[in-house]
Image (cartoon, rainbow, N blue to C red; front, side, top):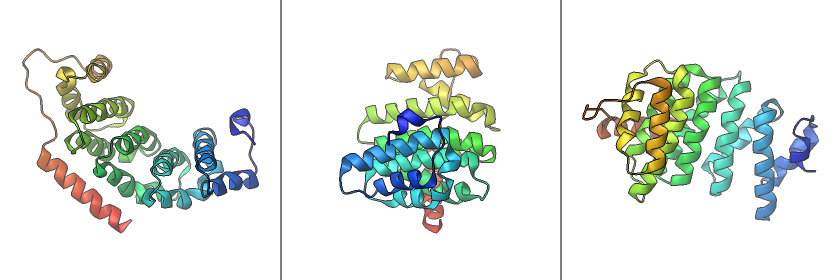
Length: 227
């Protein structure tokens, strides 16, 4: 069955179970195809996958990176139908994945953040602080850090109406007006056009301090260990 051809149709539990079994297939093509189908289904019909929440959560600690990335996105989409507090319990594990300082993993966590914040507004400021600290992590190159900063700005743009502490976010984004990566500067300019005036030249800005972010990372790691 091709999921793409049936995005507006209903799915039986047996069909969903077929995709879930596909995640454990021996061949990579089947695993990746199943993961892609389930990610699409989580976007259109999250209620169809909520019963499998705990199984998706197990992939966060797995060795297969692509399944981890898809599981992160799927769990974020399931937040919209989560009335049992499962997202709150698994959130420290999701956020802790950023601390591995792997570009694609961090990008997927940051990309998933708005879906969680929109479904669970009380988590928005906590999530916003964590992803702002992503730029302080030790990625392989400065360019990797700049790529992550671009993802962070775009995520904060989506989350901005939900944030209670807006000023630190605006200051964080303003600091990227001088970023050497053009795409990051453009994202910062668009954000500020939407949410704040562009700073005058030479005005000081504040970023999350490395020590503060270190505390955030350590707390996240402890919470993840307890989750």
